[in-house]
Length: 304
Image (cartoon, rainbow, N blue to C red; front, side):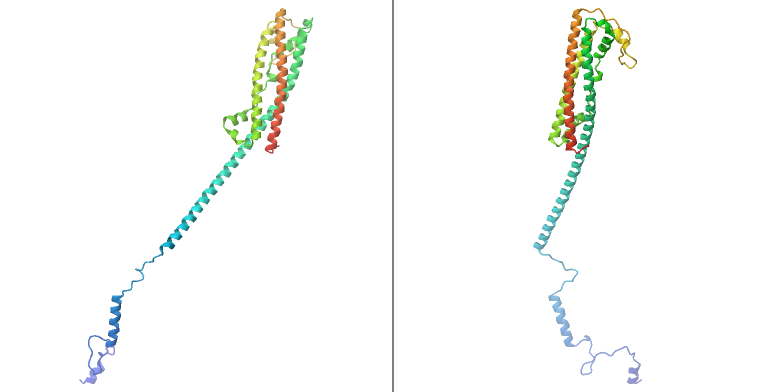
């Protein structure tokens, strides 16, 4: 087979080996000497000056910039925290202030209701004491008359009423006052003038109640003196089922009493009339003070 035929039968993808200028085949390095020189220089440069990969590179920040940024962040966070706490304190203070203000108004309104009830009762008592004074004067006059036996029905009737005190007994409506003093709620009343007026009214009420106890003791002494003059069985017949005193239709008989017994009875009667006038005067003063306190409370708290 000739050489030309061998060449033609070789596959097209097989390239002939490189040859030099003399036509000789070059084995080994496929690049030219210049290219090899360039590649060698680049390899040596990479060995002497290695370049770190991007993934291995670390990002460094300047120290003063980082510290400055953190200081500002801390200051801002502190300010925001302080603002949150302060706003919470203000909200809680306002809520507590509103609650105490509402409680104060509730106590004042309740106190106004109690004083209104007191003034209504005081009016009734003053009227009853006026009636009591007239009855005591009439009883004293009839008992010291020359002929008391003629009108003993009226004498027994007035004598029975003289020993009773329920009609002019004063029991204050002090539920709110006691709650203010015992529970410490008196501090809720922030206006000094109002607190002083309430305290002054309470003092006068307590003083009057002590005088009322004196009157009860005096009535007890009167009953002892009356037992020597009046028949207790007659008193018993004068009471109805509801313990109301009725005037007898007949003239019941008085006991055989001495001048000393009448003198003792007259002294007790005088004491009762004098104390009745004094208590009526005190009730008028108490009524006036209650009216002034009501006016103060309604004005200061804008109540109707």
